[in-house]
Length: 87
Image (cartoon, rainbow, N blue to C red; front, side, top):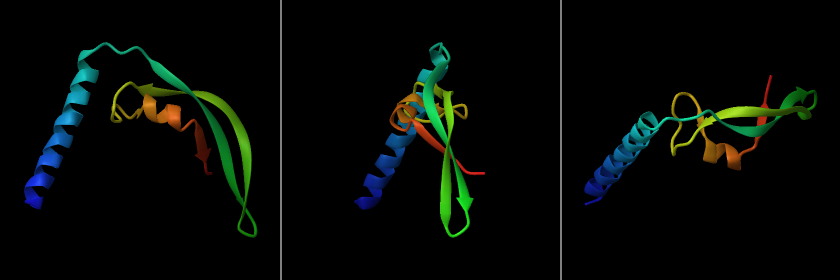
């Protein structure tokens, strides 16, 4: 019984991903961007860290449920507008 439920959930996830990919491929997409703030995290001596504001950049994104073409979904970037960069 549990095996059937897991197979059904896996099949549903595959169908959802393929449908998302097909919708992205079929519709013409203009370039979408989200303004993201970047901070540089620099490790210091004594287990301390320094944080420096790097500025705001326009991060490219795709309007879909899942990441495609190496771009993050726009809904994810809108909820996570701060990026931490470690050297």
